[in-house]
Image 1 (cartoon, protein in one colour):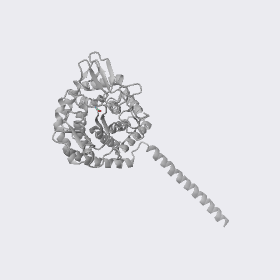
Image 2 (tube, rainbow, N blue to C red):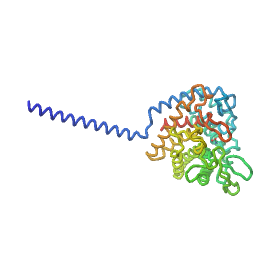
Image 3 (cartoon, rainbow, N blue to C red):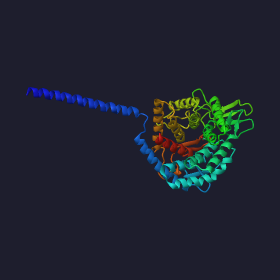
Image 4 (cartoon, helix red, strand yellow):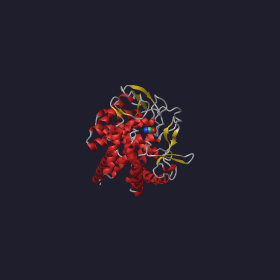
Length: 411
Ligand code: GLY
């Protein structure tokens, strides 16, 4: 009996030790899963994204009905129920086909592809447009995506011609591509122009002609030198002397003030330097991108939902309008940048991008089905000082939102 009791006690003790060890191993494993999963995708957000793609495809079918012949969507005015369109020369003409193509890739809905291919036709002629710096936006977001999905010699020719047209605006004395045409003694460059360089890198890869590549890096280096402030915010508009390259003015056009940080301008520059690092692997561009990310993500005026005010120094904060388009662009760039940095930084960038995508997916920003003229997102700010496209949907807000979600899916 005593022996039996002792035996039972020893067995109970052994069981307890065993159970403790099992529990310890499970807990340790759970910790490991959590640790190594810190930069992993969030299943719940992936579900939200899947639903967003389905909803966005339905929205773009609504939008299609608002567009006639060779017109391109510009914006929609909710108060007056007015859908505004543009012709192919407007800087945003590439975003509609680009968004349709991204959504077609996600849904395999042929109607989206058909509409994208239809609208590419009236856009084709812009390959010879030498009067704008926006050819990267117009042609690479459209024909670049078309060629990526279904490569064709015709697309390739259009893109090469576009890169040639864009290059005609480069001035070696200034070291930049001219953004806006102005008076004879002015040479205007806006920070947005960083977004047009991706087309030039593509052109060098395809043609072997390094002049496109050299223009892109010269433009980016001049931008680092003159456009950026010590805190890594940027001016919007610089006016150079076209003969000497001397900076004549630093100002804004779409921001709150010359010395303010216009949100979308910060987003364009940020995205542009991420592309610069992707294309060159030059660490100085990575340093620029991470420094700009630092400015954006640590800014005291970045709200908790991470949707920036239209200007980081907008009057009236916290009651100033938000710009959903800036959030879309920043989220997309953060997700690409997360692939070029250490694990801790990657975690920070992904987590911020997740918050941005979640916020944009909520009713506050994502339009209810059938509303908003068919645009996906509400509450963008196009040009506050001019009073145009203020608190309305924007084609580029939609395009970079869809791109950000695609990038998250593909992380
Ligand atoms: N590139 C003009 C804008 O962002 O509004």
